[in-house]
Length: 193
Image (cartoon, rainbow, N blue to C red; front, side):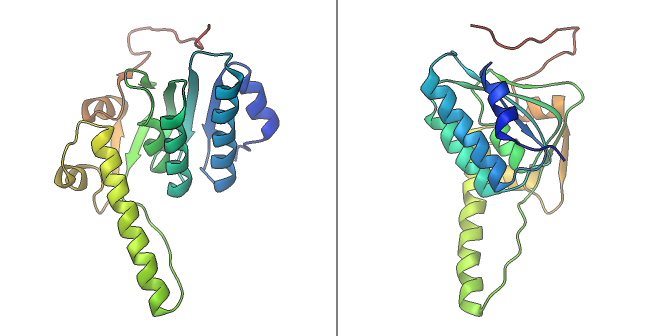
């Protein structure tokens, strides 16, 4: 499993690039959040490029990153490759409109979040309220960052009882991404100032 070491993140940050590789742990979310803040403070770039290849992970960590993407004075361009799944899709779709790019062999996964709870009856009821809040937040996020415009559409198509697998092209059709890059011999490069 890839480590989100501060040293590696710093080397990418030199170019205004942040990577989410592997599971989105709370530590990985914190490192990404700190990178967004540092790149904004340095003001050496005109955008942030976030490259994502992740099976997902912490939904709370993902929403923290989404909030910082919204806060960022620099637009955050997102590029997905390999696997963009679950909480990683939440982050990916938050990228700047027109700059959410998937590579052609990317698999995209959307599903309802899962959790485990324990405790006494009162604690379980309190946790249930939080789960309902998270579900509503996720539905609103999908509506805001896709072509799906009602709760019913979201729950029927991408937050179903089972996993919803999409090709890169299907993710564009649903509005989670803006383009599939590399399908017509395009060559990519990092955004230079």
